[in-house]
Image (cartoon, one colour):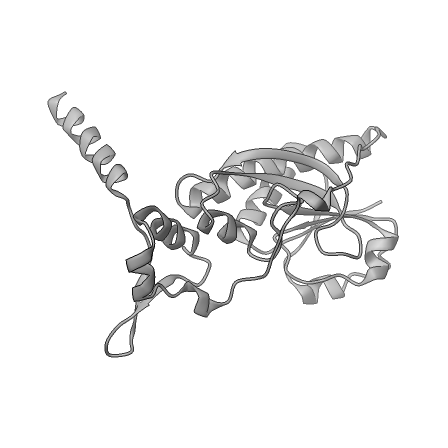
Length: 234
């Protein structure tokens, strides 16, 4: 039985590197759809899909043990752009969820789930996802190796929610947003749309876009000022 790791995002590759370092196993890395389509004789294999954007054929899911990482507390925030939607909606905590894939989007049985904080910028969030994701995948791999039962938890979709993938035009911050939204809401939108996602922007009078790559709230500025004041006194 072979193991494949399918993922192309930087945080997904970080998980892969940690897996190789900690497990010492031969896990083949697939970084795009073309590479995936070139795999021959996929049958009864283990495939991890981490930060993967393409829908699989039904036969692949049925004939192999396919596991997907979704960065939300499934069944909440199924679907596209889960991290952005959660941060923009003011969620303080999320979860790394590993589930056994079926023919439906993000509806498979849960194999692993662990909470993490959504505080900080996206690099902080991705770092937490990478650490917990590697931990969860290692646990599952060890169960395969030791022939230990992998417990599956069925999702309760009555408690769930679904979100669609965000489009670049949805990153615009308009005048009405500045008038009606709080500083925290705007801060959340800007940090949720840091690279590699379509950045938040304002359309100016000349029609050009002013991109917003980062932001801080009054509380954060006060905390930084307080830190430097204590440092200077020392």
